[in-house]
Amino acid sequence: MPRNRTVRLAVLGSSAAAPGNSQNRSSALRRRLVILTLVMASLVLITISFRSSALDSAQSYGASALRPFEIVATRVARPFRDGAGWARGLFDAKAQNRKLTREVEQLRQLVARQEGAVEQNIRLQKLLRYANSPSFPQDYDWVAAQVLTSPSDFNQSVTIAAGRDRGIALQDIVVTNRGLVGQVTKVFASQSRVTLITDPDSAVRAVDEISQSAIGIVDHGSAVDSLVFDRVTKDKKVSYGDTIITAGSPGNGKLPSLYPRNILIGVVTSVNQSDTEIFKDIQVEPFVDFSSLQSVLVLIPKPTPAGR
Amino acid sequence: MRSDPIKAALLLFVAVLVQSALFAPYHPFGGSADLVLVVLLSLALLRGAVFGAFAGFGTGLLIDTVNLDTLGSSSLLLTLAGFWIGRYGETTAFDRFHAPYTSVGVVTVAYTLGVLALRFVLGDSAPAGHVLAGLPFAALLNLVLTLPVYALVRRAFPPSEPGDRVHEVRVLG
View: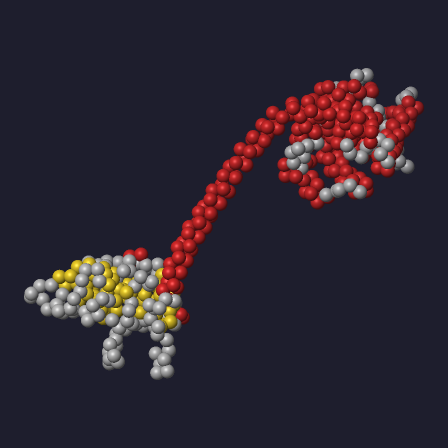
């Protein structure tokens, strides 16, 4: 057993063989006594402190005695705490800046959306008031639709966000609360194309609201967004400022007008006539601003027993 | 050597004040550095079990008095910690480089668990999940503190001469 012998030698060589062997033993005893005493003292303190308030006053006095030292320590530590707080704030500020920038951007978008929604709400309320007013054509239902595109110099038409799915059909009339817009010339599933009355191919049978005998055709004028009230003979009285409205279909004609009667078109801005021309030259400014169309109403004919 | 208890009392007193004024309010990542524990363990490593036990008992009383906590609760845990690390210093860890770091790392974990267990037994609040989540960072902070604190304590309490050391090996069997 050589390994045991080695161990025993090591023990003897370190302390067991030394003359202070009994001193080491007493040291170990002392150590055990100390730890046992301190642990017991701690347990006694815990017990007394937990089960009664006998030590409270002593603890209170002790805390009061230590309070000045704590205050001094706090004052001494304050610059360090402030410095640490400042450094931490600096790091936090960068992260907070990024976060706030993101929030500001999101809020800006939200505000823009809400402002758009408010404006749209106002426009739709106007359309709704018009749809519920007595001047709205009685034989028609309506579908409100958002305008998706703007007319250009070459293309006097707009796209609206409503199509076959909303009951829209070809040649349905499109209006706003301000007046006539045009007619549907293409229908898709959820979108439609509306040709404006300012388009060269468009023509509307119209009448002077005051001088009801002055019936003619409103079609495109010389400028892109202007109209002329054409085919009005010189014997009819049309004045500056007169309102031009749709004339509808007189009687039960075989070729009725697509446009129902009494829809506003525009106001007369000039009336001229010459000896060489058969008809008056009447310029009309449309009530509808075609360059800023946002929402429109599509007139859907109400079903009749004879069908649509 | 005779002035060691006085120096140790002063050092631990200052450590308790610094701990309550400077370190206690900060809990980065849920953990907080414990200067008192690091100072106590450094002292115990350099001065042995009995010294460590007394230092732990006194420091615990001071902490409980300052914090108006249950008297004796911190004393019990710090007495055991001081004694244990003191024995470690007296026997195997003396003058080993890693000894202070090992001691601080192990005792930080054991002390935290002990505090939780004791508070639970006494019916005080013991938010184990929160405390254990911050324990790794608390241990890391204590290890970072160990380098300067142990160097400072070692300078104030130079290691005793080899002849003064206690050597004891118990033969089993």
